Length: 391
Image 1 (cartoon, rainbow, N blue to C red):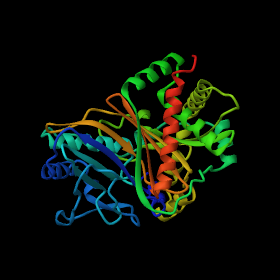
Image 2: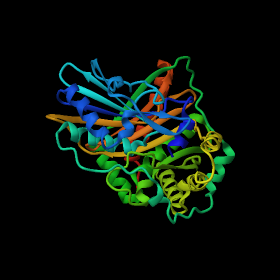
Image 3: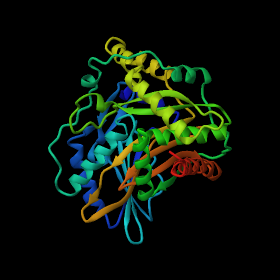
Image 4: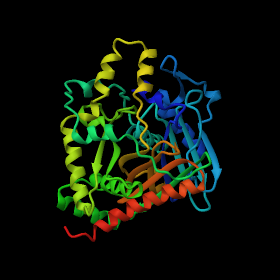
């Protein structure tokens, strides 16, 4: 799976991030020591990735520059090359009254769930209670006995309609991170309504994305990827800083006059069918079989050829548990995916202390960032408007 992720290199900045905003100060030297401690459990974090041989090469301690301090609140994730540098970078922002942190990790090393686990290990080490755990990076317990069913009609349609990029203008290549948050009281109402309808909150978020994209693109069907955490399919233990995510790539129609509830129920049925057929393993299972007999060079070629780069991407990182570094408590936090260039528009969703953040990370100029932020604002408005819709 590490090799598969290298297909992104050279096309996008292959890094993912956790943003944490504290109500107190962070000791940078203590945090750097925590990085070293966690490195004894996840040694790959202190290595560079040798793409040619697909191996992690340790970087001498004297050459490591993992942590950087800046004045003011952190805004965008650090920029670095995991091929020549460590797989983790940390940015600490010293604000007027409190500090903030961005923990960045190579997407070659891990997915979002693994990054979240790493951040909790980092906090534990900082607080002096690092657990004795072993990192597990194999998919074998998950893939054992998995049967993949036929594609759904939604998948077949997705293959026929191809990509659907937004046509927002952009002339730059600067990183932007735009965030819009639904507060906890509103999220509680959304949770209650989704439970009454028998759907998941993720169905609600996907439905909102689909409806906004259909409106902006003026199309009747929207092609959208939905990442899936493989960990739920097998026992990989308490720590798995690794790539253990698959993908549902399907399509969802939005008919004239369809209510939000109608779209949500359609999304719920499609994702349930994809889940029942184990379609998130449709490319992973055959690739892992080929990995046992083909050389890495051929596998890399296959990865690049099968690389899927949807114009509109969606990732739900789930609920971030409470975090603290010493006496400094995290008052808000969110996770983001890769910074993507035009014409791609990314959406990352995560929740902390009841509030849910919708974030777009991109490379472009201010006008492009404003346009992508407008998309996530419309998505948030769709969710909030649903509360006024009759059940």
